[in-house]
Image 1 (cartoon, helix red, strand yellow):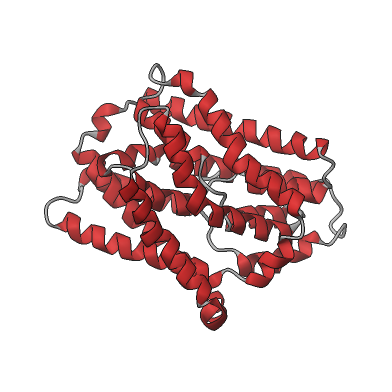
Image 2 (cartoon, rainbow, N blue to C red):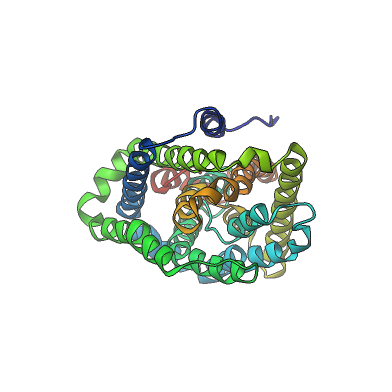
Length: 340
């Protein structure tokens, strides 16, 4: 099967919003209304994620604790260590703000839908992928702000108490509320998956437009040139390649099956833009968010293209009727929360 590298449709829309914010940034009183609308959309997003997450899928997947422990270690330990190893690039090749964006990228949780979709495509352990990706996002709401505070403290930054409270109120509280109501509304939310997908994308577009508007007004595009952006993209490629090598050969050294290796590679190497952009909007100063999320936006598109190619290579190595993990593909579609 021939694979063509083509940009994700949502990334094209996202870049269009960045262009719109660059040409017509939000100004004046409209900024306040945009902020209220964005806060509501993000809270609704996390509420729906909590309502959608099936407890049965989590319980079933938790039985494979070694696999989940490896994925969590890669997501919240290996990634940050690689990010710290890239410190010599700042400020010579990357500005301090862009390097902070790299560190922020390194402490984000995994994606959900794309991790599961690629695992299913490659005939990996889909039920474990559902649990691992969901657990990563739940833990990320607590671990990401903490790790941002630890890592950026060494860079002269940190997370304020107000930011932690904002995360608890705007992200974690709606998620918990949704999970508590899951027995009542979970089935309805899962049956209307398109609503969740629309909420995902709408909230991200609102955050990106607001963040880049503030950044443009503050002089974002006067700060970065094309060379800097190309270097940043190269850093993202190196980061992704390093993690893929660690997850691939690490899972083999630890004696995991091929199906589990596939799950570890795809769940361990992903970073969530759905969780990342709203968190950046809460954690960082408004004028810095646009630059902070640039590495994440580039990484997201790179990870989609690379992992799509890898999934097809994995699938080609096994007979179509080998094993049963691929049968979880339908479950993956039902449990997946977001494509980004």
